Image (tube, rainbow, N blue to C red):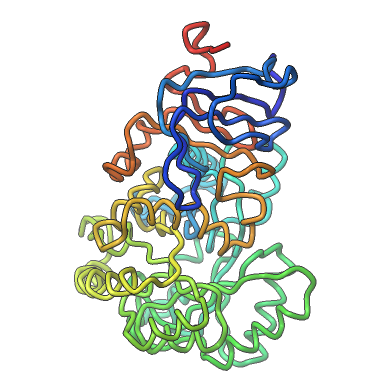
Amino acid sequence: MNEPGSIRLVNARVIDGTGAAPLTDAEVVAVDGRLVHVGTRREHVPDEQRSLRTVDVGGRTVLPGFFDCHVHAALSLEEGLVAQFADAGSYTTLKTARRLRDTLAAGVTTIRDLGGLDHGFKRALEDGLLTGPRVKLAVGVISPTGGHVDSVLPNGQSPRAQLGGRMAYVADTDEQVLTAVRELVRSGADVIKVCTTGGVSSPTDQPDDLGVTEDQVALIRAELDRHSGRRRIAAHAQGAAGILAAVRGGVDSVEHGYAISDECIELMLEKGTFLVPTLSSALRVPDPKLVPPYLYEKKVRWSEIAREHVSKALRAGVNVALGTDAGVCPHGRNLLELAHMVELGMTPGDAIVAGTRHSARLLGVDDELGTLEVGKIADLVVVAPDPLADISVLADPDTVELVVKAGEVVKDTAELATGGPDNVAA
């Protein structure tokens, strides 16, 4: 029986996202979108579960749906800045829809978009008008004049103005910062993103310049605490001084953290602050023909800084969540981030936990997502290779053969669930 949101996988090897050892000859059952059994294969299956669509995955590995806690689905530097300025708004929207589909097909069932998507995309995904991951939104980004999201060039022109919408919230005074926060909350933001440093891609500042201040971060925290429902604060923070300002002010996550120092690491361990290192972007130097010279020059320098410093944070045991900065790096290859984490010192098992359980904790959805445990939403990813033996296999979206979101099959390239009787077990 093919009931909506219900599926039974057998002959599986389960990595459940908790950090526990894999479970072999396992069975995973979802009913009405939620997990009702994760464990060894049973001889006696309840009649109501036996009648479900039952799929023999042939010893493949079943993992939780992955997270990407730092994406920009509406952007793509790979396509070139000129193309994005020239595209009509409707065409940009359709390209964004394709990126969301590609992200889901890569095995990422939940994203946090940190600037670019508006609430309409979230609603369309929830209502089934678009195919893609579930999403948490920042909507826009706050920085001071001349800071990371102020795209005005020295000549006074702003190329980003042609993109439409509102991503940049330029705010200098405390009052302006609080007004920006209130506007973002009104616009449907789940998380407030601030820039406590400059950045690599911004034209008039540097990654170790200071931006939104420690006191202003604390003001934002106090403002958000006035509202029902906890909203997180994410800080674009690349230089060490700005990382310290962000953590001391009370952010939930440091995004990038390229020059993270021993002092930063100690404070983040003390406060439990998450690091989202975006190594897919940090370690990648783009084609100089696709980006302005200032961006290319900064990227070469700061990639080496990130490699040296972020590896210290990973080895020290800072809380890490998976985020790629997709949009700055290619979309649809999100799980390459896991291989970069391992390259800089994490074990494959710890990298998987970072991309599942820890990411769910950062987003405040760990009671529903992030691990394969009874009662949680049935987001599943199935791959043939063993990712604990070679984590890099997850970087290729073609390796991800089956994706299940809330119990519904959304990708099945090997026809495991739809290929006929050879794929179906009793």
